[in-house]
Image (cartoon, rainbow, N blue to C red; front, side, top):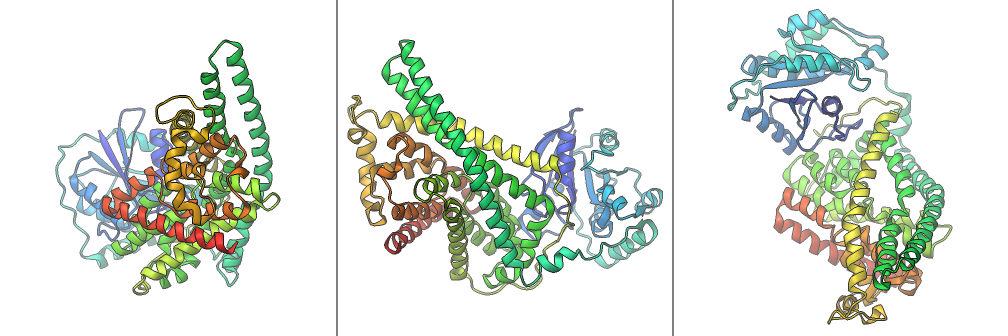
Length: 576
């Protein structure tokens, strides 16, 4: 049996999905988290599909069309409509559309979520009256964040009978006025939830100092990340270095050939270990971002940025994909479906790779630690700031007009960051990082070491300068000479970065033995950081762009970003 989760944005659908299926789908305290369909299975064998959030059956954005099309396909046995109990009036419009126009052809279970928020406001909901006025018995009251009511919801789902599947004619509730009148009547009879007072914090956070506060918050995040995290990263790096030496010596003592011993010590341990050494700093930055997401602050960023974004021809809704870009470009590109029009979506997709994703951070830290000791966070913050600046300039140059003022940015309530949610989000990022380290970065590091150890005839060389990799790298290095880093090792690292940006660190470590001062100077390190920030996205990101915008636009994006990176790096090299 298959059921689908349908509801407003930021109503707790993904949290319910995670509880039912024991999955780790991303959840957050702002709208727009779910950008594609998540699929999981309950302990009882029921398939659950988490759909993007919608407010009605009339689609506006691409993600809303995904939900509408899935509902219309009829390829399911029932609908679980997740409603925010604290904002019941807003959610009941969709509920009534589902109940009045799909039921009884399609059974609907109404899950009234976030009852903990209702109790916190000292409110109440008349359960029996709500069931009677909705004309539905399958109404479950729950608090997914606390795990309350999950068993009742599971029982209601399992009580549904499989139906003969087929397309469903979705009525878009043409008489909207009558639906709203019914919603008002239901709320007047059943709901006693005091409206929350305007948070005092919003008067400051959304006031005249909004941008200064945002800059201060991000600066503090980077400072702590690269002071505390940098110290931990250096300690871990020392441990990895000693382990690498010990592994090489142990293999040699066991009679393993010098070539194989060096492959393990220099290719695997040094390559992968150099990336893993930055894990503590990444962990701290992920934690900061998770706290800001779950507290509700990032939604405020979308709100006060709406004025600037409108001048760029976009809306505050586009800020969420750009913020996602600081974590990973792939989900950021997918979340661009919430941007609104096709033109706004495409411009957002093009701008997202300018955001410095977590994969670029180890590269920045490598350069900052080597050439800007004591000012590491200034260098890294500058890289992030330049990326945002370039994205803004790009949007300005491609903007035709300001967007209309009907873009609504929803502000969720403030909440203390929940340790369980923050931990789950950080662990999810850590798993992604570990998978990349054990697959892409591992393979790239081994391949780089092997290619730097043999010549064109696959004879072992005494010096990497005579290797096959060096010959190939010199061809591209000529194009990089005007940028200050026309070295075949830098060129080889940039090629490796097309697979995964973290591989740049591993490649440079393998080729330089950890001494990157033989390749870069402070000026060329600044130019190299800018080039890494701006040039073509990694293969995974390009694949996501191709799926959302087409292969031709993905190729154009890669070429345009690389050309822009070349000119920007040249300017930095000349001015530094």
